[in-house]
Amino acid sequence: MRRIKKVYVANRGEVAVHIIRACRRLGVQTVVGVSEADRYGMAAMIADEAVVIGAAAPKVSYLDINANIECALRTGCDAIHPGYGFLAENARFAAQCQSSGLIFIGPDSASIEGLGDKEAARQLADEAGVPTVPGENGVTDVSVAKEVGRRIGYPIMIKAAAGGGGRGIRVVRSEEEIAHAFTNAMAEAGAVFGDSRLYIEKYVQNARHIEVQIAGDESGRTLHFGERDCTSQRRNQKIIEESPSPVLDAQTRQRLCLSAVQLAEHCGYKNLGTVEFIYDVDTNEFYFMEMNTRLQVEYPVTEACTNIDLIELSIRIADGEPIPFNQDDITHTGHAVECRINAEDPKNGFAPSPGAISNWRPTDLPNVKVNSHCYPGLQITPFYDSLIAKVVAWGETRDQAIENMALALEGLEIEGIRTTKDLCMELVQSENFRSNSMNTQWVEKYIDNRKQQ
Image (cartoon, rainbow, N blue to C red; front, top):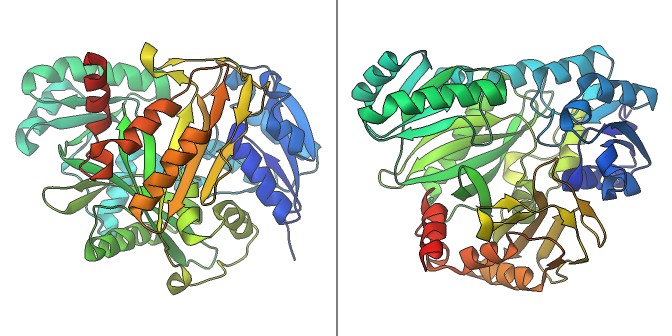
């Protein structure tokens, strides 16, 4: 018998919209908690109920644990779906949901806490037999950092143990740079995450960023849904994702995906998660980087190739249902590419571009999907992440997927604000992308070259 009959959506924007629609397909009612700034957002329009939980600032609305739980209980919800961002990887939020009698649609608080800490996650990966990048946890001062650098060789990366979203990371190419980079990384980690702990790992120069989507159910069974290639990044923020990775051979792909399952099983992981790896193009080796204990922004890429609705699956697993298929039943067809469209001005240092959308017309093409919360007249505010849409294009081959993406971006009409749409168009049509000659630095080099022309 279904326990989840009414879900509280603790998020906003396009992910809130798609959680609400997934609930509707399952016959589950929804309540969305919104800030004052989002009271006229699409999520508020399409949910069964919408409740204002606080002012525009995230700390008094979307990040307020007590306000969200109180609203969920007051409106008679059985469960909370956190989406991604905000409280999605907050172990205290997951624990308080459970202690309040609410089902948290995601992993338990112990998994979030253990895997959310980068140092602890590296240790868990080591225990599970999953390869990790050579490095050192718990680096507390510059002298130790210098010793680690000499031992593993430069370049190295200094990273925040509690980090995420590309924050608290510094690349160091020589010992002379360590003191300045270490001090800055520690300060940023403390300011952004409230935790100044750092760790150091070898920096793979010719690297691809590849991640594996997994899911585990209450029976302890864990499956993978293939990999996504997220190499196209700017300042450690993903811009374009695709699946399958065009750089992996079949044997490496199998080892990579099984390593992700191995880690999740070792941790007793439940619900959706993504295991992220660095792949060394020169050596054909991969290394565990981190695990995201939540739904990923780029989940539609996997959905396009597997025809499996991951948000629906997350709700079913949280409701106690077993995953309704086996590993051999998950088939991957064709190729998918996703472009993130942000309300930013690439010609002005990617400055945020708030304002009213005067014209919004998504592309209506076969094999193209636009995930968004936008509509004509929507006010894009400066308070939240700048993501306004995800354009996903599928094709029988990678070349076809790229062509479909180019057509999709060409037909997408957005007026009233500046966006990254045209930049995405340039990137997917560039020689680097089409020829698959990429690493994690290529987008920034492309942008730098573009400025000089």
